Image (cartoon, rainbow, N blue to C red):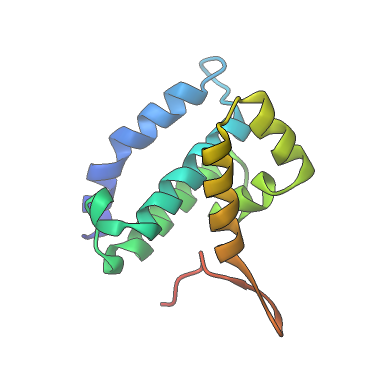
Length: 131
């Protein structure tokens, strides 16, 4: 898919996510948004065809989602930042407040482990796809 096709396919879903996270006309719950974006990305990466994608579409989806994260969470924030938040103490408390199911938490933590796979050299970030 081209970036334009990714936009056409995934914009309605992102609009729905933003609406679910909306606190007021001008504010969204950033914590809830990060959990939902991390879930979208995890599902897409683990089973691209289920999301209507191929593996080669993932870089375009990655860029698309990062655009939303940066716009709504803050400058310089990325999908990786969402997983860093989820695995932080504040993120754990947020997951509890949001009543995220145990299976959903386990799924997000499993994927976070994949992202921050420890190597002899340190952490390897698998959300940063090769060019």
